[in-house]
Amino acid sequence: MILPTKHVKAERALIGVGGEVLGLLTEPMTVSRLWDALRERRSAVSAKAPVDYTWFVLALDFLFMIGAIEAKRGIIERAAP
Image (cartoon, rainbow, N blue to C red; front, side, top):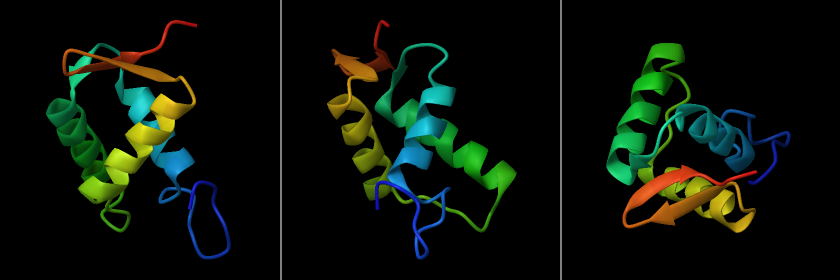
């Protein structure tokens, strides 16, 4: 689930979705704007690898737990290095 396996492709694993989310966070965004950007990117790249909202939230949780992102007043941003 977190890492790709024989049954979970890299683009569906939480670490893969989290990497995409980090790539989209070039500026602070609201959760809804980030969700829209991820869906737009996914539909442009591959229609065969959709991500549902639950999986997106799990990826945000994962990124928050490892200290990669921060949430301030409803805005998601990359954590300072």
